[in-house]
Each structure stands twice: as C-alpha cells, then as structure tokens.
Image: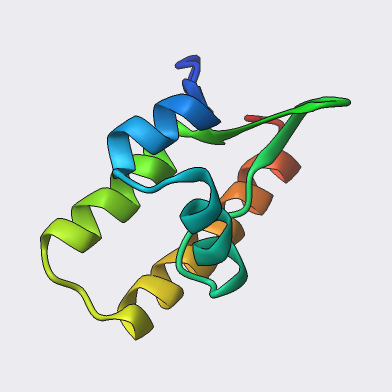
Length: 88
C-alpha cells in the first residue's frame, strides 16, 4: 500500500481536461465510454485524476470505443480493488 493521495477532479475540471460538455460527459458514462463518478457527498461527485488521464490518453492514442469500454471496466475493477484494500 502506498501513502500517496490521489487527486479527485470535480466536474468542471473534468470538462476542461476532456473537452466534453456536461451532457456529453454523462452520455459517455451511459455508453460505457467514461468511468462513473465517485460520491464526495450528498450533492457532489468527482473522478479520480488517474482515471481521467487514462481515458484522455486512450482517446489521444486513437483507441476504439470497444477498447475504451474495456479500459473503463478495468478502471472500475481497479477502483473496487483499491477500496477493498483501504487505499481509497
């Protein structure tokens, strides 16, 4: 286990870094092309910075939608494993 704390990006920053609008961001989530947000409170969500970077890098690399979906599934699996290990 590492002592490094991971940054969480709120929606406006995710929009800035991805280039997606709010509606497109949530459309991509329903399409399986963007990770689901994590809850930060009753009315607040965010995305782990590492996941945002991974998706952006995959898009820049020209990955297909199917490859992006596989990446999103892997990121969700890793997020769950980290939570079980107490790293989140």
